Length: 106
Image (tube, rainbow, N blue to C red):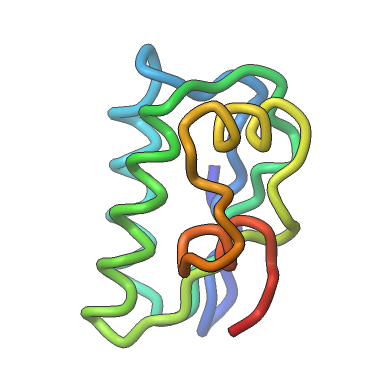
């Protein structure tokens, strides 16, 4: 699901986002990237996820840099998403990836 105004989009993720639903999540993000320069992902409702979501969001983050778009999470990763990031080794605070996921700033 995606909420948008004239200049920005918020992509709201469902409770369970993983390999079974990643194609739809990818399509939703692609639509947002095609129409907006400011995209935010709301992952606060996730109760189940896997590394496919992390890989998709990491790819989107790098694409945003290349396309000079703003891309962010609406809130720092928490709960099951945070645990998936930890298990996957994405939370080293010295990396751009961790700064993105945890809202640590630059």
